[in-house]
Length: 237
Image 1 (tube, rainbow, N blue to C red):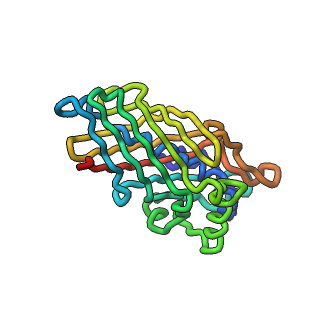
Image 2: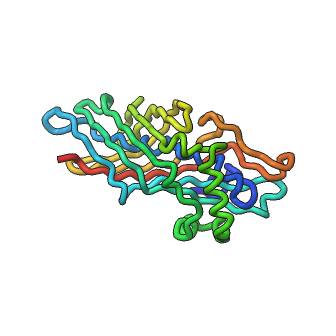
Image 3: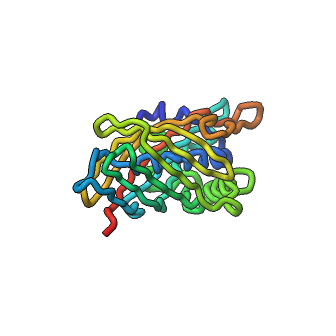
């Protein structure tokens, strides 16, 4: 992913602004997008149900920093490996569907291995207190409101299919709000397994959110949020 594009989404200093954006991501509703498979039909004209393998699936959210005081902050990576749900791959692929949930408590902020993987722009490492503060804000009532809304729920159905490229209609339920999105995904499937990958950018307004700013915009987050999703699933016996 191009580092410049990745960080169109800006974040302010000390991770304190990050939380407000993160959820969008998880929003990412994007995750379920990949759950639908690229197979056009299943053997015997029957539907196949796949269970998501959490150990092999991950949602990553990249947020940057912007404004005159951006140098005081860090770019951030937030991720979750606790994606759970199922995909129903119909004999006619356009009749397929997927449901998916992500516990907001599973969001991890700035794990060193994820920052190392992200590479350029992530060389610095926020200290433990900054990370703890960011995560606390992220789960707070003012942002994700994790106590009242402990999960993000997503459903997906295909809009169009062109080879391995699926355009999916996503309905995302987050923090008591319902958001409708369309997201592309590259997917592959067999009788035993299903895998999918997607990289995409959403705007705050796509998620019903307003970009956070402070000090008259000297510290702010940009409108764009970058996502990467990898999903692996296994056919149910």
